[in-house]
Length: 208
Image (cartoon, rainbow, N blue to C red; front, top):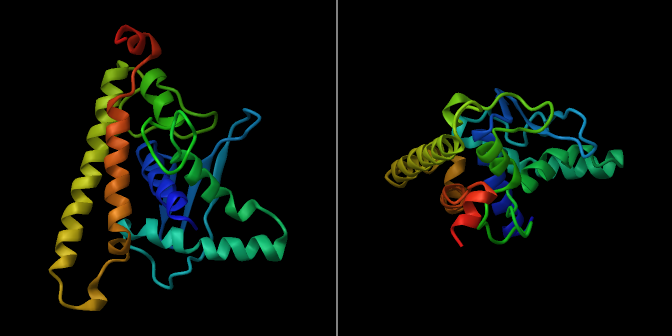
């Protein structure tokens, strides 16, 4: 996996979290995936059980899921089907730039985040967005501010966690997420900056 795709998947993970499109259980995880035809989408499972033997802590689901892509790739070869990598495709797509569709940079919020902020809309069949990320009955500015605050709370939690880990002396007491600390903090920073600049097109036009 290239660094650009990995970073896009990390952004996609937190995008899915704030939109309520992740399901995390003791030994499995799933992400909501819309259909191309516009029919109601559904949740698709990441490889289960995970490649890691232990059930992950909340903050370790992301790295454990990413590591488990190896199992998904094995299934592609053994079953001759791409179904096993669909959840990773969804992560990647959620984390791509909302304008040029690229993975290396993230200047504009992804289409799912923008649709929620501007229109209060989610893909067909998607679960309700958590109230912490705004309400569809509110003004778009309220949803934007709520999303930015929630992303900032994730950043604060991970920053605190990583500082605690740095002070530990037992190498076996290091969270798996620590290995992804740079990607996680950069992704959360990118998402906050991009969300902050989302606005309806009519509002954008007034600024030029």
